[in-house]
Length: 260
Image (cartoon, rainbow, N blue to C red; front, side, top):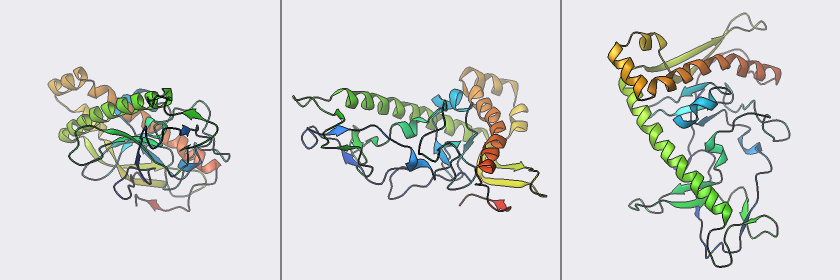
């Protein structure tokens, strides 16, 4: 249910990466995303811990399975289902859009494995950057980054900082032993047996309650406790996601559902 596919070593969404160059792309422009149709088959996207407070109001927050789990915002309960992308490719009104999606098609990456600095790159696949007549210029006539590049560079830098905080949080969470394989069950009137979803991680609330006072105090002081309860509170939204899938005819034939 909550796998994070990556192809060719690139993060989800990205099919290729090209370094942004003031020489090669001097006269290029960027067009705004006209549609979010490209995520219509994506059911879960990574979240940073900075996003938990707002994301918990819209998405169930779970954790991917495997040795290096990451937080995920569930946009659907089944692979290939996103209940927030409408038929016209627009996103559901007044719904928070995770930063992982908002930075696309840009990405900070090291051009060489041994490079210390990260460079602003982009995915040329969707054709959002090019030598267009219309759009916002990427560079000034003197070759300096224009406002769109400055804005996206700043956004990507903040994303990387948040990603580092998220990595530290996940390390601490894993060490607590609170993170376990999860299971969510939904009983719907249309089915005699419940729908069961597995293949993701979640915090064991009972174990959290049983932690020693000094452990809870430390987690409260460093902000970890707030994040854990944001995750736990967000799980109440699973039934809402399921209801949306049901309304959209995207609930598969009754079965025991697991991550691929």
